[in-house]
Image 1 (spheres, rainbow, N blue to C red):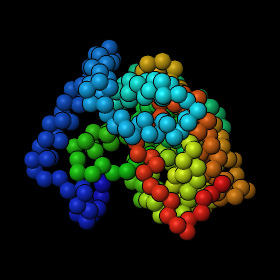
Image 2: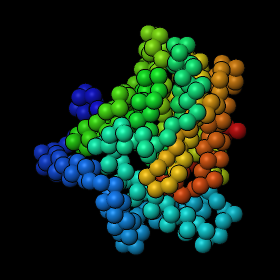
Image 3: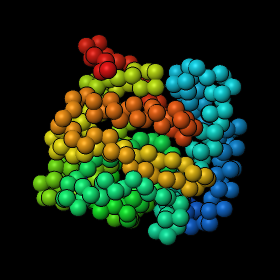
Image 4: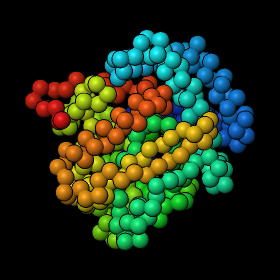
Length: 314
């Protein structure tokens, strides 16, 4: 949830009476949809797919531009096929996120398989925290339920939602009902260090592919284009020497996923700081190239141009 002090300082979080009323009504509708059976959920997703693809052409220019730069070796026909598969997945993911609000642990166990946890669980038994680097791929929202399988306390790093308190509470309930804790991004380092100080094993889970400001000191090539990255993951990892894991979320079939933990770096103190992010970025590229339709192509990931004076990290 957004701190009240932040809500007062930043006008982007202001929510007037009528806007609050409208937002509350939309959330009531989402709660109703969330209790519907999955066959109805996917029926709604099919309808939205037709609207998004054929009527709205949702962010078509952004998606095509991103795909063309990321896969210059592919033909226009292949690029458009990926876009259309992305639209279908995006609509499924959106309705699955709504459904998450009312899903039970039993339902989730049938639809999300968690593998590769053994090494992470061993660190928990030793009282050590870890860092988990994920990205906007497949259904990352369902992964908040990993808390029911993990011996670590799951700290989910989130960006507060602006100007929509009702929806923020809706999403917060969906994420935290499994036992994890949502931590605003500006408090992530403090939270990680506090758990280390107390000797309580936690997993700091970051979607580290989000877009920072153009003046970020870390720029590298990501999917054939220059892109900035937040340096928080490498700074926290070095300060706490937490082992770093990668979360690979595979889609097995519609509405069924596998979340796999892979250890990327066992001892961050023994590698160059730049290699922490570079290892993560190259792993992301490997996964995206394998099944590209599941990445968040409608996001303007490459909207910035590298400023003069900031070198490219390779």
